[in-house]
Amino acid sequence: MKKKLDLSTITAAVHLVAVLSVVCFGTIYLTLSILAIPALTAAFVIGKDVIYKQYDVHDGLVKRFFTELSSQMGMMRYFPLQLLILLQTAGIYGAEKTGLTYLSYPMLVCISFVCALIVYVIAYHIFYSPKPPITAVIIAMMYRVQYFIIVWLLTVLSAVLFSVKLMGILLIAGAVLVLGAEICAFLGIMGYKKLRKELSDEEKEFFGEEMLRKL
Image (cartoon, rainbow, N blue to C red):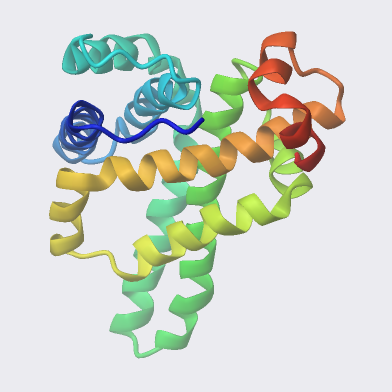
């Protein structure tokens, strides 16, 4: 029997999106994106509770986020991925200034791919292995390519529409985009985990037989 949405559920969802968006993207903006990966990882940890229906609206969301942010600082080891994005962004700027605008399109695709890779690295870290090698993440990413395509399209859309206005939208409701990307990456990672016969009993019970067959 399906549960009906009540006012308290809607209020909790709005609170989650609004607060998580402000603390996550506020942290990213204030640190000039230096702490982007740890901040997104902290948001993904909270998203994990949402996915597994363990999220407690009565917990202090802001305190929980910054506690997780502190504990996830080890994810800075993937900072070179952000440097790749920075270099590609500089390349796009240079291409536009020199009239070689057509060169910006492949660089935009590259930026989107690296952003999607970061999403999968974080998801792999949370749902599979604490210190995922990039090669393993790419294999998992491509195993269920349909989920990767969704994540990649989300990053393409964000890159193409990037502006001050979009930054404001992300600060208000960016958690929707983060949680959507996390869910897609989660399903892809779980499919790869199933392939390797490493799903835990709790994960098998969570999905159920019908969903397991689709992973």
